[in-house]
Image 1 (tube, rainbow, N blue to C red):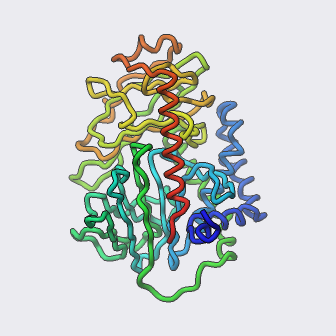
Image 2: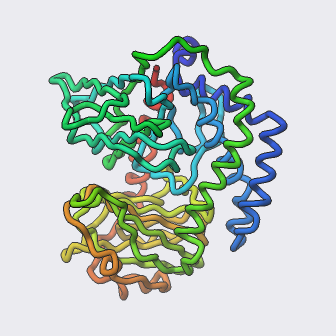
Length: 425
């Protein structure tokens, strides 16, 4: 991609500002504060100690992406919860936190609920369209932590014959309208969740956003960004560890917590359910877990380091979704967390992170599950004994088949990132 094309990339412009903000003395001081106040007191094992610096760095990048992109008058569609990558020849550390989902592209832009915006996009007609698209208006917290105030589900979007679509975004209640996202008075940003389950095929939708009403306002200056930067770094850590303390602090190794249903309006089927877990294994052990797939149209499981940062999923099978999973005949699924390849499907590869955490997502539910009956069993066994604890035989996977699986993941992620990095306004 040429320099001119890079200049037109919103992500490149935003990440360039992040590089500048990271060098500020007050940001360096804020990073040290969150390291000592939030991270260090929660070190539970050597893996957490060894990955501490990376976790602090990524928390800062995540926060500063939101600072650099926060301009309601000139909205910037920003990719976040991103792994470390190279942006037009310039490396940038990841901005992962809170179980970044490897199946998903998260993007956001900041808004003023009194103004009107438009989102334009085009879903490809060649079969590479994503599995699901969801838009949310969220409260004024760092993106990913603000509670959703209103939703636009993909079922509420009409697409033209060529795959194109236009979504209006403003403070007018939806009231049955299609292609419209309502901005309640206390909303501050729009979050776009796009899910891809066939990594070698499905790609993010190309999107652009524009403000189409509101007064003329000056762009947010770098000095204004600087005034907010340190405080947002601290807020990012505070919100991350509120989630950590709620969802993970009391979970014992090699167990899963009882799933939690995401709230839904009265009378509606919940959109999703999640649970967390911990694993602590040696190189010759496996943590085997079985649970109901329930009625979820999307099912995803991922393992992560102790700070909830994803494990290199482009090179390792550290996450799996329903399309990549072997399903048991009785509607359950069984996964094998191990450092070494068991030669079976449904392997979650720790890549040496043998003390870590996990998250399971059930989404697009067709009926309301009973969370207390969802988890069927967990076992810590020697790797050689896995077959003795799985409820149904899992198909074998040869080394050559495993390599093909990983190659497809890597190529898919490379294609996905190319789209996200090159997006214009």
